[in-house]
Length: 354
Image 1 (cartoon, rainbow, N blue to C red):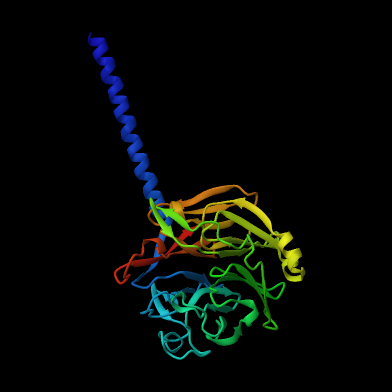
Image 2: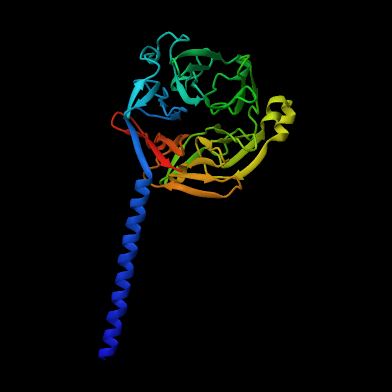
């Protein structure tokens, strides 16, 4: 009887130790995850979407005009604080005021490339339609002055367009852009400023769903071609609808030189994926993108293998990505969480070491 009691006690003790060790291990895992993600800036009442980091390590963010009271459309983050870029005058436009080529109206993306900062102005405040034409402003980061303004020709966009994101292809003197409001891609010639629209309302640029399910709740919206990324290894352009689950790609030479029929035939279905927002490649051909429905950031390596980079409460609609010095920067735009005023909401800029 005593032997049985001792044996039972030993088993219970071992089980207790295992449970305690599991709890400790889980706690360590959570701590490790918390240490991996670092918040480097937060913005109260200002919904950040875009982020980009220059070669010199300067950090820029943008705040779309999805509602009134946007303090700055474009800002440089200095010591964790947003400073209007290039100055307050460029950022003081308000809804109802006159529009000109020296103000930001509704900025959706900022992209630093070499010594320039590309600022994509949808010119569609509150999603109520394009005012005039979308603009792409290019600023010289050495002097912080305007270098060039691209005005999109009328044949390259629609009234309900929302030009969303861009990638610069210096080798082919082109800039590629997605239109998430009216499905399609735009190709802008860097030298001439001419632009053409391709894959307009094509299945590869159109949304596949009218909602996403996040934290058990439906977020109802239909967002077309959104994420865009240029692969430095195979020289293909990758793109993805936001409310969709398919990643597509196309060789840039066909995109630039092919007829519309040739371009449509050249579109490749890369993989079935989660629903992302922005996307970015690193120098080795690894693709990073969000899993909006699971509060995660994913990595697809050059061979197509997919792993989870980070998941949890520190990922709240990872919107846009930038890579500098082997560190991934991403914004939490919390789009699905907004049901009313955002005055007391905090939107963050985070980093993860790759």
